[in-house]
Amino acid sequence: MTRQAAGLVHLELAGVTVADVLQRLLASNPELKSHLFDGGRLRPDICILVNGRNIRYLDGEATPLDDDDTITIFRQVAGGAP
Image 1 (spheres, rainbow, N blue to C red):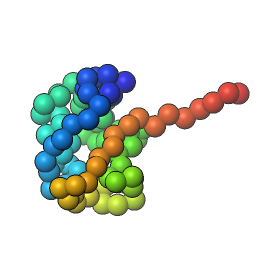
Image 2 (spheres, rainbow, N blue to C red):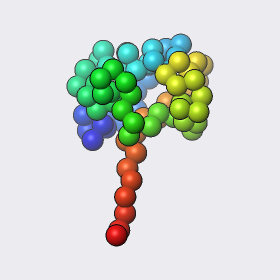
Image 3 (tube, rainbow, N blue to C red):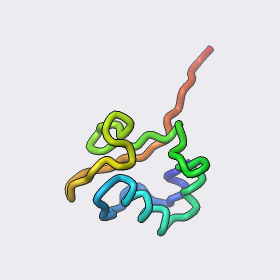
Image 4 (tube, helix red, strand yellow):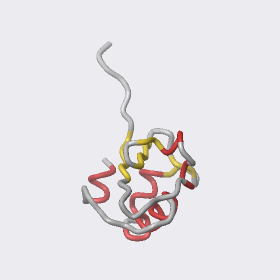
């Protein structure tokens, strides 16, 4: 749903931290805010990876970035057959 809301698969944005990149992403795609945030906090079902590492185990949205870092954003899905 987030990819559909953004209408894109790959985007290059500059930023010193994950929060900077998210601000730039939302500035150009404000409809994503409700998909990514709930009351100003990152939704618990949203997973953000920097080079394959979950930011929850790094410095969260304050995770610093280098020019060649890759950020992946996706909604975690749980469940399965009963």
